[in-house]
Amino acid sequence: MPRRSFLRGIGATIALPLLDDMVPAMTAMSRTAASPIKRLGFFYVPNGMAMKYWLPDLEGPRFHLPRTLEPLIAYKDQLAVLSGLAAMEAYPHPGEGGGDHARAAGTYLTGMHIKRTSAADVQAGISADQIAAQELGKETQLGSLELALESVELLGACDGTYACAYTNTIAWRTPSTPLPMANDPRAVFERMFGTAASTDPEARIQRIQRDKSILDSVTDKAKRLNGRIAATDRAKLGEYLESVRDVERRIQKAEEQSGREVPLFQQPAGIPQAFDEHAKLMFDLLALAYQTDLTRVSTFMLGREVSSRPYPEIGISDSHHPLSHHENDARKIDDLGKLNRFHVEQFAYLADKLAGISDGDGSLLDHSMLVYGAGISDSNTHFHDNLPIAVLGGRSVGLSPVGHVKFANNMPVTNLWLTLLDKMGVPAEKLGDSTGRLNYLSDL
Image (cartoon, rainbow, N blue to C red; front, side):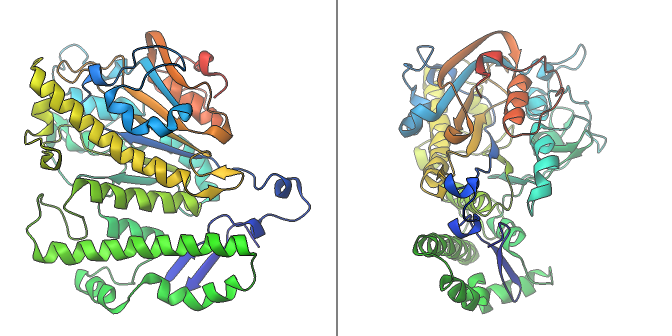
């Protein structure tokens, strides 16, 4: 069976996960279960961290997970916490003053000092994810996925005199082309699995009401395929199709609820009201995209810079951005730490999801390199050095060593991006302010 196989029906194309029958018999690939496909994901949190709850106490593999990272305890042997990395180009140049949040997001994956403007003439650099997408996208249906949990439709100036385009995304296709982040699960689902020809909202609602599931149009072909593949592949295919069905069912439920309830935040229909439900739905979509090899590259913003979202579900009524400027108030620092941990809990859900999906000779997590971090460390002072960065996964693609690794002399975080691009098979000579690879992590 060809590696790029699909189930096709009226208005729907369902990409298949990697099945054993897709590996030619009597080949080296078949004897190693499957040649691993590598995935790369960048997960960004805004407004810095409560660093006292993020930094580990010890260096090396025997470190203790700090409070913020405790949700990842099950993956400690696949986790590298990196401290000492910096985004020095996010600091202001003479005369620029404020705008640290815009520079944090715009510089994070580009390593470039962004242009101060509130107009459309934004300027940054090509981001690391898009360098990977330009090459790896030749093998996939989607070059990359850009996802978010907050609306990024704001226009004008969002941080001082800096355009909202800088705070709305971390992905830049070209130095002047920021990529929009999608936060509506329905829009992401339709991008992955197809949609009706009409983009009229009423036509879309009618289609949703008419179709029980996008899988109905490919059910007969799925049944025929089940008769041709081995029992292990039938089980894998059944689990995958049920995952697709479950995601669509939850999206439809969210749309029904949004029509009769007052949402906590002003968000378009189809977005769950609860932050964690929204996060899980978006992470499930990302897992499906990785599982079917629709894309191998993603960026995911758990919040946008200068976010004013409160988190009443965990007892935090203060808005995120004002809370991050805690002025060393113990109560505010503690609340910020709880908020940071809540974000990591959502990321841990994705880790659990990927770890539970078999992929070749391991799991999706084994074949993925997931970077979790921020463009600001101490949020109270807008520091861009000693960034909070963690790398998870990659057991089968050589992510080693693990533990807490501390770098000195404000090592550019772009050196990490170059190292990961090498591991993805997409070497780049330079990226922004990079000075080389992370020699200590040469095994990456």
